Figure 1 (cartoon, one colour):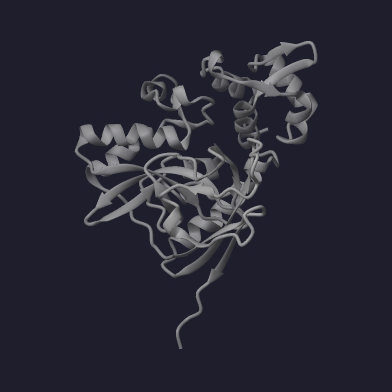
Figure 2 (tube, helix red, strand yellow; figure 1 turned 90 degrees about the horizontal axis):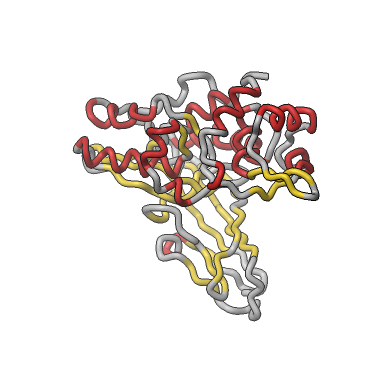
Length: 302
């Protein structure tokens, strides 16, 4: 095991317990997050936060997902991260790549009119190239040509990024914490959204032109919703995610140092908005979205 159980639990316990939602059973921990029962028992004995109920202990989904990645277990999140590696490499190779992203909504609010139109967020609407022919079986498609190279920061922008050099990635369980910038200073933990917010606030103090962004990390076979920081260099915004390189290296998916925090991520991201938003709503209720994705190299011109 690459990280001792005691260290894993100590990191989890930096998050105040009242921010958690204890919804995950031991069975879910094993079946979904791939945490074996004996390992879960060891984590629990060490003090992993939980709620005891008549039906057994309940755990927080964010804790379990973070632990699975730390231990390189074949959870959905860890398996999805494998696609990020190729995405980043394609996004910085300097050659054009075509992406076709299907947006497949699943209604969770029991809409009384399945044929009712979907409300599309304004940042997404102009990027949709294909709308569903049958509103009752909707699939939206975004087609995007990506081409970019990486950029290494210097000066104040690099100093800004290095403010997170000792911060570890952890899935933050509540919106209150994601808006608590001092939480980063207190705990040295952040997810990508909180890291971007923190750096954007610090950028104002340091005189660096920066903004938060939300959209998709374009990856095959599934893109994923993501937040990052854009820094303006010259006349161009460049995307940075100070935590993703460490995440991939710690997970054993990339060599250490392949993606230092001060290196931009090229055309790996597709921006929709300044911060996380609901991309589609049906009958006034946000829907869950899947993003199956195809990536196709652009043929060279004759």
